[in-house]
Image 1 (tube, rainbow, N blue to C red):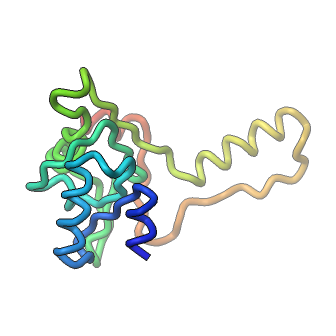
Image 2 (cartoon, rainbow, N blue to C red; image 1 turned 90 degrees about the vertical axis):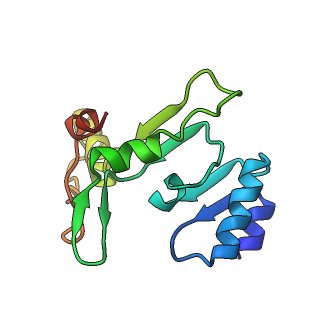
Length: 141
């Protein structure tokens, strides 16, 4: 499965991956042979991988027992990877809004336009979730 992804230019990097596969992803990324690397915070520590943009799907993490927000150091360790030295003038850091919020905004717009009469509003996950907003993101910068 990993081989198919790597052939397509997609790498995966996380603590649960065997070290030799993590090193392979790191080496391919350093040679600019991957156009996308999906990784956890392990990618931000001690690995010199050129990255143009960093995308956060969540501003919190689960440690096996509890969910907590990334602290400023953890956030900056990962976000600081954006911008390839010698290639880019700047790097880009994006944090996605929670999926349920985006879906509710779309529903709200449909209700306003009269396209939806009985919307099924989404709720935040019940477990392993911390609510984050634009303010949370700004506090990490």
